[in-house]
Length: 299
Image (cartoon, rainbow, N blue to C red; front, top):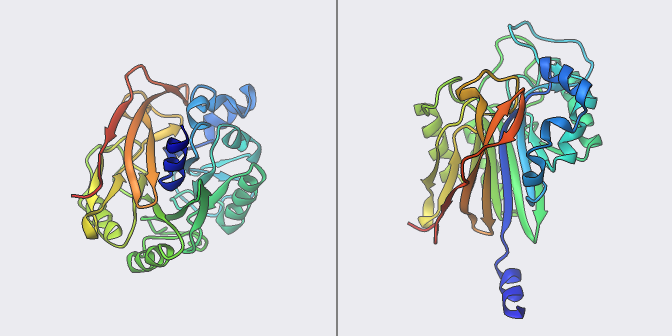
């Protein structure tokens, strides 16, 4: 027992749980107002609260600011509906997506303030990483959106400035053990990974990203290892699909919780906990957990 404890201190591991899009506007907001802020996460919270760090993509504004852009879909929710995020165990969300500025920089600021009030960190609003420390392992989070707006004010979030992100991630490794990039990219509605996603994943992995977590397509896409210098590998989840979302039946309602075991050198292993979205809320799936463990991340 003493030896095992000493080994754990010498080689700690941290569990990072990641999910896809959490969208609390539209019909989801109305339902939450009726059944309570904790209701969307009631079935999955027992899994998420056991993680050392839990993260997601927040696909809406939390605030009362007026809409600031003209487009077909605008997503804004009352800040109170986000209370369940903290209760469910989430630690951080990325705001670098194509809906973060639906209410302009005022709405973005309101969103950040609401999340802080519920104990959540954010990333994706600057090139300085958000660092979370667990068991002595420092994990640096970055967020990026691959879709520049065609109308409205684009200030406030990070867009895919490839060279800027690569430089920031290299610098982050000087003070962090693990670098995680959460990126909004890809093509909606398809499980096929685009060539741009694959190319960017390779570039970011070479620049030092240990884990890349994708969102935007609204359906699950593959999770795979990508080669890095020195024989190491980065873990890439091209899209984690929806999580809390008024999704249509079918592929949009099939999701997962990605559970990643981190060590000081990066991702050690991962598993997928199946999730089905029913009535906009995630429910644990009936299928067994799909585990992918590697003895070493060296090729």
